[in-house]
Image 1 (tube, rainbow, N blue to C red):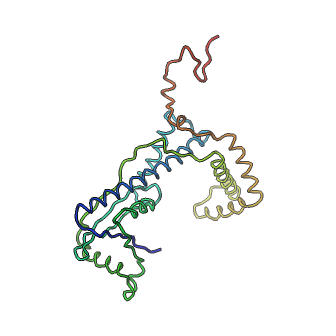
Image 2 (cartoon, rainbow, N blue to C red; image 1 turned 60 degrees about the vertical axis):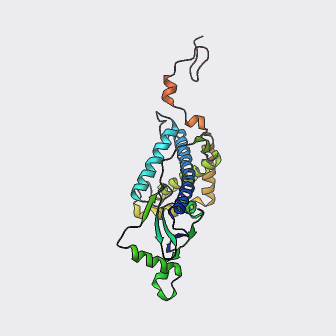
Image 3 (cartoon, rainbow, N blue to C red; image 1 turned 120 degrees about the horizontal axis):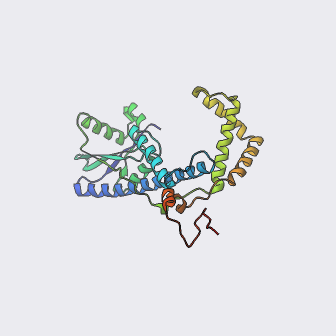
Length: 277
């Protein structure tokens, strides 16, 4: 939908605006933190499964640190380029105090709908959006559309009165990480493996040109939902279930370099090391 997202707060005093912004920042930070840990959990899962399947080598650092590095790089690239995906956790708000209506109009900018939802539930903030198509029909424009038109003309040659950014640094809390069960991960991997196999078969082993990608994907999807496709994926899933690991926090936080450098325990056999008899 061609929609303009705007908000309104029935206050103009600095102290009241500050209260609204503090609550909004808290709401957004909480939503961003939850989304970050969801993405981090996914990244850890992929790394653990890839290592078990021999797709990548075991890194010389903890799996948690590797996942954080990978995820932060994705977030940095996404936010730098302003791409609208769940990896973009940036947000900012522009405030336009209006003496005529004795209120403050708000434009919230974010590529992430989860952050938009967190801002929208802030106390003192009400929705003031409209469909942009209304502007093409002046006789039927809503009051909201007309008001935003007035504000746009008023500030077209001057900056918004106040702009603040809500982006903040993330601190990882391993207690809130949540990993998919092995059977769910095996089902997803089996589907991906089957799709890749079918696409290679339809391409007869040659490289698929980007312009042909969706066509071959349609072919592969058709085979994946067939009786043979379902049987193939069940067989792949069974194999994956015997390979994929159970993921636990103590495993992903373990530092292999520290383990290798630790002196042997003379009283107990360390894992993988046998005492002389």
